[in-house]
Amino acid sequence: MVLPAMIGWERVMRYLSVAAAVGLTLVSLSTSLHGQRRDDQIDPRSAALLEKGRALKAAGNLAGATDMVETALVVDPRNRPGFLLLAEIARAQNLPGKAIRLYREALLLEPNDVAALKGQGEAMVQKGAVEKAKENLAKIQKLCAAKPCAESTQLSAVIAKGPPVVSATAQVAKQDATKVPEAKN
Image (tube, rainbow, N blue to C red; front, side, top):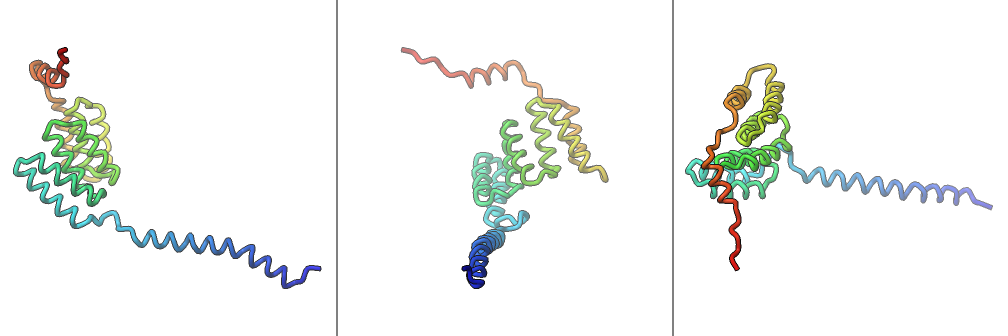
C-alpha cells in the first residue's frame, strides 16, 4: 500500500533536480554577463598604446608603431581603430595582403565600418583585385545611400586610377630577393 505522503515526496524529488539545474544555469549565466564589458568600451591601456603607435607612425618609425599597436591589440582585441591603424601601416610598408587581412579583422568587429571598407578596397586595388574593391565600393554606397560620403568618392577615385604599375626591373629585383640561394657542396 502506497501512502499519500510518499507520492508527494516522489514528486518533490522528481522536480527538485530539474529546479536545481535551472537555478544553477541562471546563476552562472547572470554571473558571466555581469563580468563582460560593452563592445564600445575599449580598455584605456589599449587606447594609450594606440596613441603611442600613432605618434610613432607619424614620426616615420613604422616598425615601432607596428609593435606598439600590436601590443594595444593584445591588451584589448576589440580595439577596432587598432586594426585600422595596423592596416594603414601595412599598406605604407607595401604589404596590401596583410592590410586586407587586418581590415577584415576590423570588419568582423563592425561590419558597417565605412573607413575599414574603404581601406580594404584601396588595399585590394593596390594588390590588383579591382573587382573585389568594386564590391566594397558598392557596400559603402549602400551604407551612405542617404548622404554622399567621402569614403565612397575616395575609393571610387582609387578604383578609377587602377592598380599601381610595377616596372620590369622592380619585378626582377623582387624575384631575386625571394629566390633562395643554392647550396654549394
